Length: 151
Image 1 (cartoon, one colour):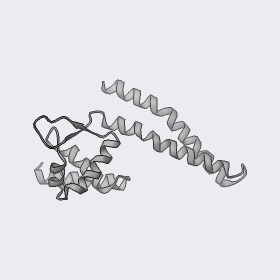
Image 2 (cartoon, helix red, strand yellow; image 1 turned 180 degrees about the vertical axis):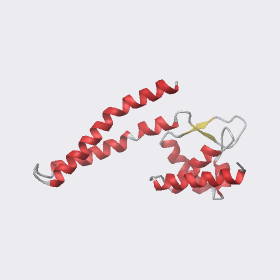
Image 3 (cartoon, one colour; image 1 turned 30 degrees about the horizontal axis):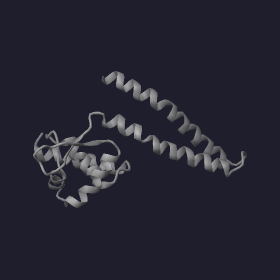
Image 4 (tube, helix red, strand yellow; image 1 turned 90 degrees about the vertical axis):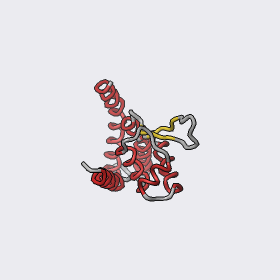
């Protein structure tokens, strides 16, 4: 695969991630982390790769740091901060998404409290609550099995 094809594939992945709900610049920056041949990258590297300003990359890097997908590394002798995709990025992301699951669960419970048991909305909201309660119960086991499988 040529270098051009590699980065076209990265941009296609970024589009999929954006369609999945990730902010566009965060998705593009994540694609750089996934497709780079380098061990670490700087914000300048990402900006150069994407053809954007370093300022627009800053927010994306902060978002990726906050979700646990990337980590900051010490870079002795360098004035720039270096980042890399975490080895445990995907399980970390999945586990941090519990906050979203909890938010959805709370929203369902609030809706249930404002509707009566015979109301179709009450039934739908109860189904939503039950799903998210089930999901929260299953997540720890899934993550444990993943860790066992992948050392």
